[in-house]
Image (tube, rainbow, N blue to C red; front, side):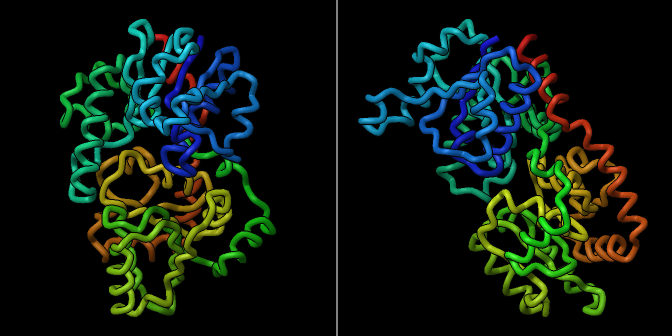
Length: 375
């Protein structure tokens, strides 16, 4: 079988949709090596995380021709030019990995899209109005033209049915897995080498994600202030700051915990596993997500997890994590104390959660994807 992918983010995004794209192609090319995989991308900068995939022998990269590049029209190629590429005529399946499908794909090709989230429908206030309009138009177009839709969670499937009235028979829920770097247990020396680079302490609570209102760092800061200083450990925040961060800093200063916050800044993704693996506790208090892959990353790193009720969080974190109302700072503080003061509880959470996330293994996900392609 020949399978094509809309792969811009495979090459252009270091995290998020890029990690998902690389995970899918790596899983398929490894589990089903006899297939041919074509990555259609407006450019293909060196992505060190993808070298093994691109060297696998069954993966080909297709970029725009000279005319598109000369006239700086690679975005036009991505929208309407891909369908005219000679290799497209050989495909049985075309998979849009990031909620988009090119126009003009031949009718004989099965068209599949992965939909990650519809947050811009549910919480449009978190986006610029022009971006919401663009996202909605692109998603509606792709959904209307897709033969099959992959939702990365039950929450996303429900949102597709609620906001776009998609027939559930067209939707298949297939979870995503974490980056393979998180599966390797690092040595103490490797962990210490990375964490020393960012001056991280011996013990800390970790939270990961863009520092924006939806990710809800504010509640973590407020909860931290409710923990007695004698038993409090620092909070390490990995994520890109936005203007919301100024609000968080103001509250942290007011509550006397600013000195307990560590924000390393621009940490490259390859350093994440070491920082995860040294953490005593992982907190993910987001108000809403399509899936919440940092939860899986934390569990792979054998760290106990506290996250939010609702949305997709129970799907990603499993029943052995602790769930709290993301707006309830007292409940979050209580959960933090429970885990940090009870090592037996922390160990049992890690053991049970590690068993739960086996469903996110690459081969299991590749087999489910192939079932969709062949249906």
